[in-house]
Image (cartoon, rainbow, N blue to C red; front, side, top):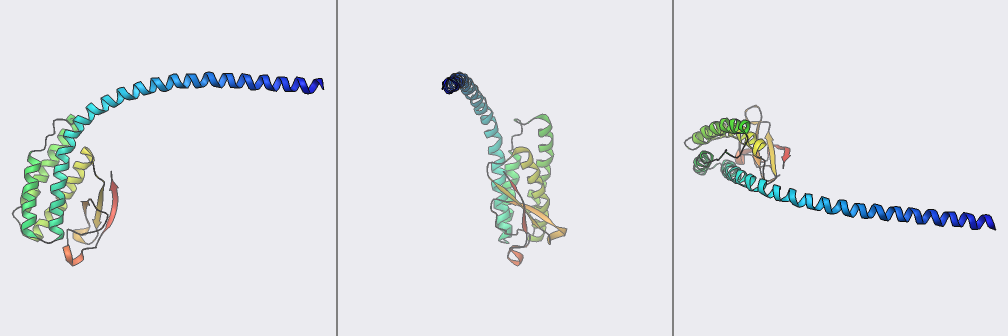
Length: 197
């Protein structure tokens, strides 16, 4: 009987010790949580300042993407005049792109991309449909390179047609394939290569 009491007493004491120690740990965690919360709030403030910079970056990139998508849709519809207008608008938007918030290396890359993209957009603005589509292929590569630097607020789908000019890619905001290189002739020709977030 003495052994049972002794064992029970030891177990109760062990339980109480563990409970007391875990309570101390909880208090430490509370202190750590409070410290983490204040650090997170500080990080959020820094992030919101960064976000203001990235918002000004993203707004130019978003305008370029919107004009690019309008051009792509005009090519899907095989509408030469609409594509020409979209090409001219894209050319203007690219001209207004502010690269000053990017790093020196990114600025250099973006300058090259924008110069090349403007040239293709300008050609699209004054060409026949076949020629517009040829320039759209290289323009799409430029826009993909731009997005790799600027990022995107919307999910984009890099799509690929194996038939056009040895294989050609483009960006879309929709998973469904609507081929800008063939329009209604081969509207569904292609596949999604990757999703860009």
